[in-house]
Length: 385
Length: 78
Image (cartoon, rainbow over all chains, first blue to last red):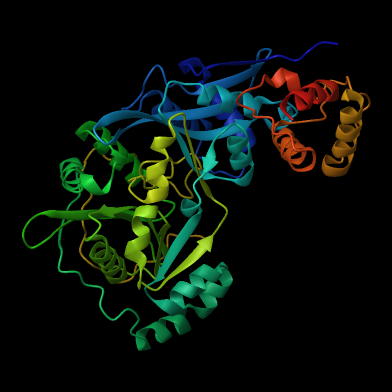
């Protein structure tokens, strides 16, 4: 009997086209304008990101001459107390549909875990990935699996949550009328002053509230600018909005970043001091509501949980897991205790591997995310929940 | 001992995964019977029904390629 041998090796530039072809076979439902665009994105994200680290590569699985599996890795840097921590964010674990009768997924994951990173993470994981991750010694963070939803225009928000484009079209005028009669959320102001969010502002806010986050991202200007440009280029959830918020005294209270659309807008990152978070949440809700959002949703990151008290949020479990793995269990404790700052911005949620529903512009070079003025409700750029 | 584990494993393949394994030495990968996710589910079933936890981060995947090799691991880890 010929024993099939998988070979796991590091991703190289020459693999990008075969990986893109594999991605097309594994995810035929994802829309890309061309295969060249898909390949260019894979190259940009995994080989040219500002945190690339030769010791934390992405991995491919080969069976003979054929590339049959892939596991993308995005290195990130965080700080655990004062210690620098290497983080490897796993993304896009995939196996050729014609070669699934193998242990390729497990072999790729084991190779990933064997790397020199202090912490491995993945978010947006489905149930199959979660099971493989847990079997290899990792865990799924229980709270991160939940999502909060805050209705800003309750009738329209519920309509969007219920889903269904036809229902939305038919019932939207009635919902708008109902929302005009309702005054939901009596006060969403916060007394905080908004500024455009850039790397310096974020670093200032994280530094000011470092005691609240024993585990926190370690951004430099170039890395954060690149990340913001990438996040801004993601259009499937709407337009990226964000702000740094200051107290009247001038100190940085915190920040928010979210994708605005006429339906359920999605929060990318919300953080700040523990005492400031309820006001930051109100500021975020006010910001989104004044720009036409019907509802806001975000991941239930443990640092946010106390701030949601009394905020009239619904909770959902959509089976989307945040996965963690560390040789030193001390690095996992902050995720449970609520003093880890690990938002969707620190994971893989901002990536565009799923393609985009409509043609889009290339990521702009400008760094700061403007806090744009409120405008009348815009048409939904959002296609489902 | 090993023979009874093999019998129990064969029954588990049949009942939990609906896979009929021709013989204890059949290569589960080369014969196309098992993939990564099914292996994970199998290990969960082994833990639940047979009380043996086989940690994937501590064994070679080649040791899981057949029922007889799996039985050897179960004897070792239970």
